[in-house]
Length: 128
Image (cartoon, rainbow, N blue to C red; front, side):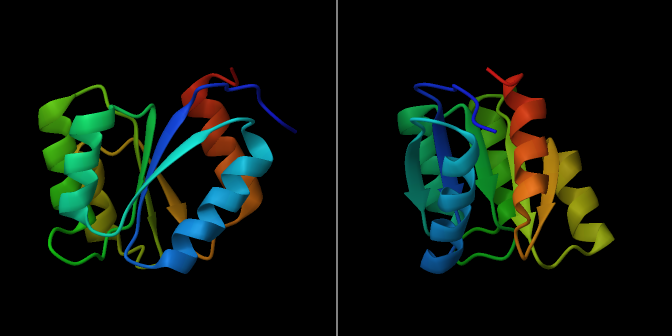
């Protein structure tokens, strides 16, 4: 299934180049013509969010410089309606709860499952 979410800007922040590529590949199967912005740590994610104001943000929790929870707080300070999805293998309840309290809207468990990403994309973009 492909959504026509033309001009959808998506920020992906993960310290792993491979993880960013995998997520981009999965999203590209669901969303046509998405524009991707990449960040390798939480601080870079906040800075790039401020510069580009993407439609969706995918954040890893464990990252250098600034973790995903701190980055979520930083992004929410810039735009409290930002749609932040946490993508992490360390799905400990306390970290997940902290991320949601900081403003994250959803969570995707690593390893990334295409169906889960599709569901999250559909629910947060209204399938546009």
